[in-house]
Length: 206
Image (cartoon, rainbow, N blue to C red; front, side):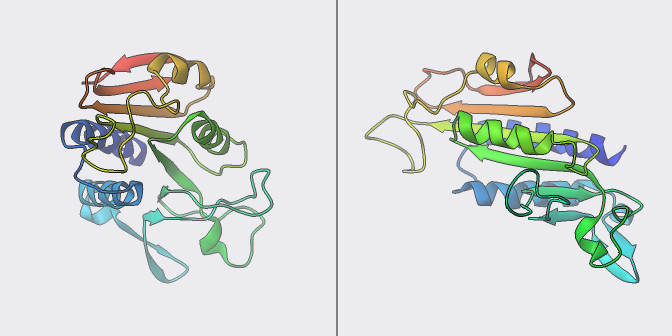
């Protein structure tokens, strides 16, 4: 199984687990850590690390820098990235080459965020200078009853930040980015489940 296929497999399993057990992590950063762990343990042991310029490096990185500024004032960071094997430096970069390795995949996360956050994630991962072979976005919602939230980090199902599958499909570009969309709603106003949205097409997973 290729690196990209492994990331896709873990993304599916991760989102299905989120809908089944939406409170296993308290914050979005906790979700990053959980996903990192799932991905690390799924990758075969002989593919988890690589050698770059005489140093052992992990192929999964948290907050790895973007290779370019992507139309911002400075370089940014990816939530999760997977270094392509064998490691390959960016052409023309002679110093600090560990900061510019080609990426097999990047994964950006959003939990209980709205259109602005998602649009920016799509823009960055699809940028021509993203330096990645594949792009994934995990966009999650966790809703509970207003005034009786299981956690104050939950949203009301009436939140204006909510985007439906159809709205996200309209935002999805005609490019390779795959958006994993997961919803948990204890009030049942919105259907709970996981969908993959790509090039405007919506596929239900569970």
